[in-house]
Length: 280
Ligand code: GUN
Image 1 (cartoon, rainbow, N blue to C red):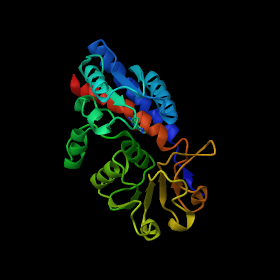
Image 2 (cartoon, helix red, strand yellow):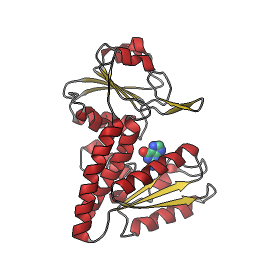
Image 3 (spheres, rainbow, N blue to C red):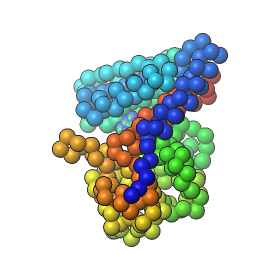
Image 4 (tube, rainbow, N blue to C red):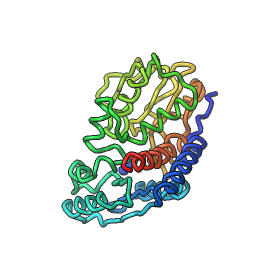
């Protein structure tokens, strides 16, 4: 039976570290690191995510403020709003919760964020820095996945890692970060001919497709490490992308909930203290 990789426990440790850094910053500079959360509309999952982010900011001793804008806000007005937050000296990090309502273009809205406050790492500049291997703010979910693997003592150097999913927020940046760790990376996605052969070879399988049960037991090699990034709501229940019986063959696996999710939130707080340290 797979060992459980406890994302809640690791996230609590990360938040303790953030809290110490935030306290040191505050003692030196006379203000707390600040985070602004922008939510447009009432997407139910987003409401729950921003609540977790507000709570984590409080636990880590950060200043945070949440701005809720109606789904009918004009793109221009939203860009100006985000731009004003960008100029606010009390704020070190700004995140615009995604997805945005259909009428708003994500690229245009994110472009209004100053890259040095882009704690989600979603702006074009920060994504380019990641590609170039330069220092910058990096997306939180991939940061959380890499941290969990390291914490669990998984060797990535030379490892065969399969990432399922090629999203701009998870799959693609994660593949780049795994390359930096010297892993051999295969990215699979909805147009891939077959998942099974590639997944069966993998030492580490990372599922970020947003499709419940896409990783099945017979696909996974005995002893592989399995990281489940999926969050799917099925009949009012949260399930990941990995079938539960994969735990019978994996050596270690993250649960859903309680795996990668809390790590995304913890890494957002880590990025916020990182951003405030760089800015000052
Ligand atoms: N929506 C789902 N995940 C995320 C995330 O990590 N950041 C933001 N801003 N929106 C999201």
